[in-house]
Image 1 (cartoon, one colour):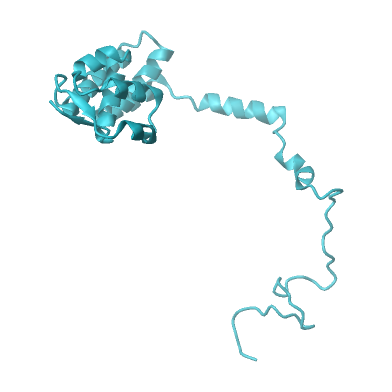
Image 2 (cartoon, rainbow, N blue to C red; image 1 turned 120 degrees about the vertical axis):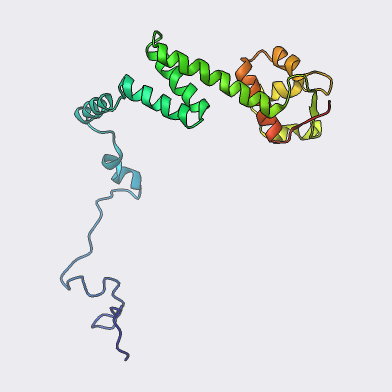
Length: 193
């Protein structure tokens, strides 16, 4: 027998003891009160919804977690300062949904929209450029496009300028520019003229 710092799995009687000697000899195995073999029945109480009193307390706690307008304005300003205009626009639009007369949020939203449009237009190059599909039409379905992107892609034909595609797609201008740059980044389209 070798000396070891690890507990032996063999008990005094030579049987395997997986508790490492921690179980008392008089302990009986715990019986389960499962009338059936269905674990769902046994654990039903554990998985049930919290009592209504606890649900009410949780809802009250969530109300306290709501940010104040100053916190929201600080968040918008932080996103804007970091150049994350999409997040700044999102936060500003949420604030405008709560308070449509919030002039600060409106200014951030308008400026963020303008900066995003400039960023997307710069990425495209010029709205007078013409693009065509860079993938075979049969493989377009494998790009995993949402319906808006698929419709915009269907307008890219090698003859229509980006400006014309933006007018035809019936999306908001900023959203259409975003989708167009995503298609460009995914190498689904390529500039031809």
